[in-house]
Length: 112
Image (tube, rainbow, N blue to C red; front, side):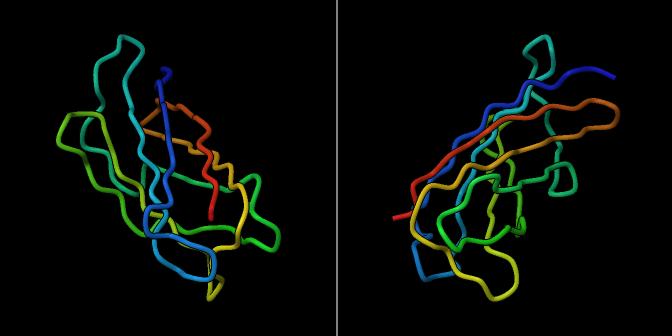
């Protein structure tokens, strides 16, 4: 097993309190030598909001899209069930597994 280096940032461009539009998480994934890890899919990612806006919910990953540059991914998440986004800070734990290789990072966003 080797370590993956994961960096993640989140942005609420279209997600807003009261709606179910996707919140974006951008992740960079490299191996221990800094080589971009390509070919990942939604099955390789997990996202869990450790901190949510008051009354907020867990999320589901709806899609993962590879970026133009190798090793970059756009992860779309929405609240589970029929829940909507709530105002406040969300801090997401992002975990990546690729075979036996694993990595993780945190990403935060102010949903306003």
